[in-house]
Amino acid sequence: MKSLKNKVALITGGTKGIGYGIAEALLKEGVHVAITSRNKMAAVEAANQLTSNLNTGAKAIGIQADVRNYDSQQAAVKEVLENFNQLDVVIANAGLGHFASIEDLTPDQWQETIDTNLTGVFYTIKSSVDALKQSKGYFITISSLAGTNFFAKGSAYNASKFGLTGFTQSVMLDLRQYGIKVSTIMPGSVSTYFNGNTPNESDAWKIQIEDLGELVVDLLKINPRTLPSKIEVRPTTPPSK
Image (cartoon, rainbow, N blue to C red):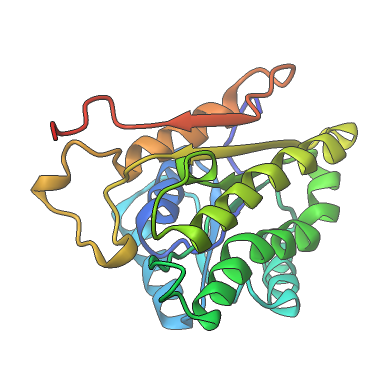
């Protein structure tokens, strides 16, 4: 995309953490942004905070939507189109993690992880693909280094992110014939609220949310002939063990 100004982006799970950092970076480039959350008030408050902190002329709206529900995702895309008449960028960011030994992991925890991190992304692209065909847009998923590197007590999360990485690469091959670009970003440790963490000074060594926002902007601005389809990103200097 030669210019991002007045493009329109939909970000799932954009009220905090990585999604919020990406939304902020896009707004600074003049992109209109819709962020979703299962909590309507949280989505609206985050959108208002983003626009009040920035003065770029770009708009942000909050939408209540649950990625685990196909009808809900379709309604979210419809709301974006009703507000902005186009959709250029979709960031499938919503995700969660349950971490426990297979002996302790419950069926409900397994199902919630897969439904959110993998099936939810399927619903997101299914709901937005027609709009992205119209705009020759960009679909980006937020996977994880856990999508190639397994670890103990990570069976549900590893499975969801391994699946998401493979899913995104296959979708990339399906959709590039329409001029739609598809990438997955696979971060390592990020300073977010994920898994009960509260960002603090001890997280300074981690990837920061603004770093991932910058990365998304760079992806959108790269020459259209080039597609970085899978991007691993990790802290430069992790703490010594």
